[in-house]
Every structure is written in C-alpha cells, then in structure tokens.
Image (cartoon, rainbow, N blue to C red; front, side, top):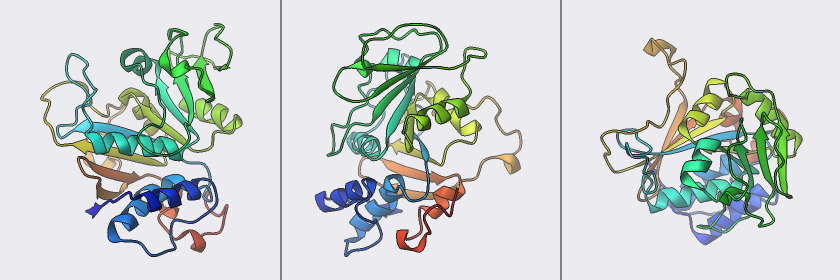
Length: 274
C-alpha cells in the first residue's frame, strides 16, 4: 500500500498537469508526494484521450448509507478531500436524480484548490426542482439530461435523450457530454448510476474509497443488474491501493487507457491509445 501526501507543491503540479502545463512523472518528490502523483496523475492527464471515472465512498462492509438513508459521514475527512480533488481534475461530474433529490449536493470544489467542474444531473422524468443546489448560478456550466419537455432556468443546459424503461443509454450520455466539450468525466453517484456506466463498459477507472466503519445494513456501493454467476466471469481490474489518511482508496483500472496512464507521460505517444 502506498501512503499519499498531497502537499501544496504536488497539488499545484497536478493542477498544471490537468491544464496541460506539466507532466506527473518528472521532478524530485518525497515518497508520499510520488504516491499522490501516481494516484491523481492518471485523472489529471489529457494526453491519453477522454476518460470516465467512477468514485464510490463506502464502509468496510460495502455500505454507502444507513437503512434510513443517512450517507453524510460514510467517508472520512480525507475521503471527502479525495472526492473534491477528483472534481478539480475532471471536466464534468455526473449524478443521478435520486442522489440530487436526497443529498442536495453542490458538486463544487471546496476542500482543495481548483476550478469547479461542470455539473450534470441525469433526470429522465424532469423531477428535480429548479431551485436544487446543483443548479446554483455560480458561473459553472450546468446540464440536465431529460427525456421530457421541461423548461429549465437560464444557465441550465437541457440535453434531451430518448428514455427506455425510465433509463438512458449511458453511452448516449457520454457522447452528448463530450460533444459539449466535457472530455474527462466523474460519475459520482449514486451507486446505481455508477453501476450502469460500469456495466456498459464506459468506466476507464473505478475508485472505491473505504472508510473504517461498519454499518451493518443499508444500500451497497455497487449493485449490477447482470451480476456474474461464476467468479471466473467477474471483472478483475488492474488494482492499486493507497492510504489517504482516514480512508483507503482502491484504484481500479478497467481499460487500455487506464493502463497507459500509469506509464511515464514522456514515454507515450499522444493519441496512441484509444
């Protein structure tokens, strides 16, 4: 397990990588700073093509909330900071309407330096109220993906897609958002939304941040509609483990792009992996 130390200078390097001004592979770093570059560098890079990241914060027994729906303190303080760092490194963050309704997230970057990503809500039936925090007028691009005709406030971009069984095709969502210039995407929640992108083969990486608590019951981090019946058919990602302080992050690579992102930036020909 690698122990991560996100110092101000290593975080500035990561922001520079995200903006195309630096690489994550050169320089003199402490072991903890090097681990931070290894964890966040693949999320910040823009030279290997678009990436889509799923992120789950859960308990030791795989729960993301209690039976009453309380999910506020599932992640420890370092787990929350980790989530905000990912937000700062991507172009857009996506949540489902149930997460937007239940948790009222702002999806902003507050626990580290960096710009807010574009905010995207998947809302097939147009249920989310116009005064939801995710629609706050703060200068950040905002999108709602709907299957119905519903006018939204000025500044909220509506993407209309076809609905089937009250669901969208995740691939159409990714195509539509990349058409809007959002190349690196974070699927933040909830667990069902993340599972749908995973089952569709659209996640480049999946990060599971585990906090040291046992809940005993409640919704699980991942529940796929077509689970493997045999262990030989289960997804076996290329996995690395990082201690970020209060939580442990399992970083799971799922595609060729994920594998390429671990290699030194100067050793990869831009556009060679798609």
